[in-house]
Length: 364
Image 1 (cartoon, rainbow, N blue to C red):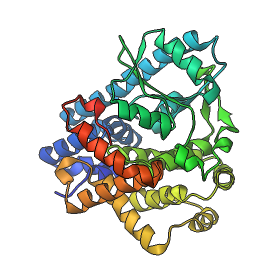
Image 2: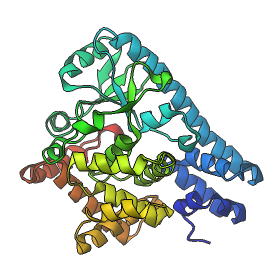
Image 3: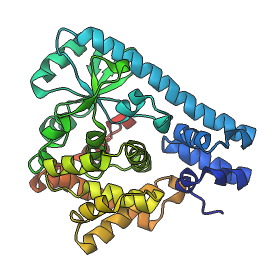
Image 4: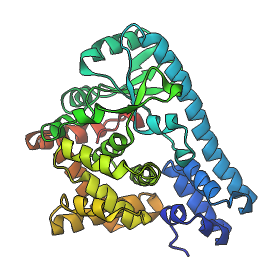
């Protein structure tokens, strides 16, 4: 029982009923560190065990869920401000990632903490949107000049914005996929369909298949996996919830074919099976296997991702975890920028990060 990890409890919340206070504290601390405390409470609610837990555990879970509720309220407030400020600039925009899951307002995704507000704006409208926001209390996040160049040249978003009074962070995406990936993948089909919850009008959300595919591609083509467990767990929840619709897997496969050859969806499905026992129709599995990495690469990266997801909490760091993080970080750089830029990026990153700075300015 001493090897019990947060992922084990997410898979089976009933394990919280049979552990001592010390181990319970470790699980709660791990969940808080990985921004999963609110979702752990939601998982206990779905298992109908929260009232059977010790009072101090209930209180800790509730505190994590309260943070989620405050975020959700703040998101609605920011949406109201965006609607007022952008009505004469753009007709609509799309919320992405954690913002989209909060706006779905579904019990399956309750407790999901986000790092910032992510929106997609067509590139031709970005300059006017930025200008409008900068004139209404927003400023650019304090980052190094080199990082500004990276965002503009290689990322799929502008430099993040922070509101001067409310301290909310906003990321404006002008592409749904990083530029280096867009050379191989056609991201346009991700925008063909959408969801229109009344709570976020005039904005919209990606359709369920686009939401899953977009998040899978972004997860397996990034550099930093500090929130990797949260992100793969939320992909698992989306697979479970959206697949209740009988056409979900069919539409997901169709969309994947339209985007182009990418193995991120296969990695997402296979790792959700491995980590959370996700049930996938055999016809869908047969299709995903066609996009599998070669056997050695798949085995290598699958284990690296498993190490990164399972052992992110500092108390669980080991040699395997550290090697996996280094490998995945280098893989992410290869995915996000041309190879001739990687060495200069690493050198500049080391120099800039050696200078005293706030945590928000660390460059990966």
